Length: 146
Image 1 (tube, rainbow, N blue to C red):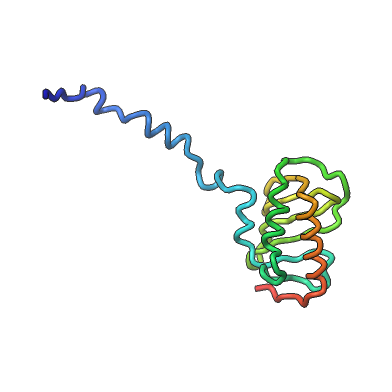
Image 2: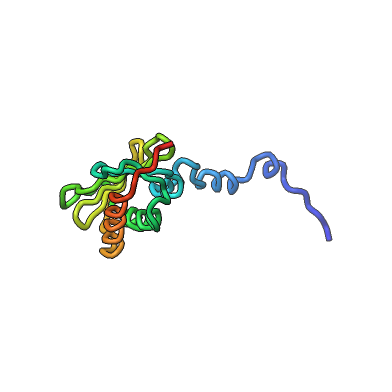
């Protein structure tokens, strides 16, 4: 079998395919979803909770409930149909990393600092379960912030 060397022009010019793949690949900053913080917060608080801050695992199933409700907020920049009744602030250490607001049957998810807000309507059962967990938290002593 005869071997024919590639023309010099093909060897000198890098292939366009790898460059196209690199250009199409998302960078780390743009590939982060607005919900990535749901795996990283350590404490939470609400504005109307006399107990103050709570550890992530202070209330059984709270992280899963909060995550299910927050992920329903997928519509960017939509106004809420009702006034905000509860505001849940999520922290990592002393840094605010996200806010979830409950307004009637809707929620608004706002990654911090300065992230775009998303609004959605979670399943009624998930929202009711989150509200029940918040009630239990109001009756639970606070967890000191770290």
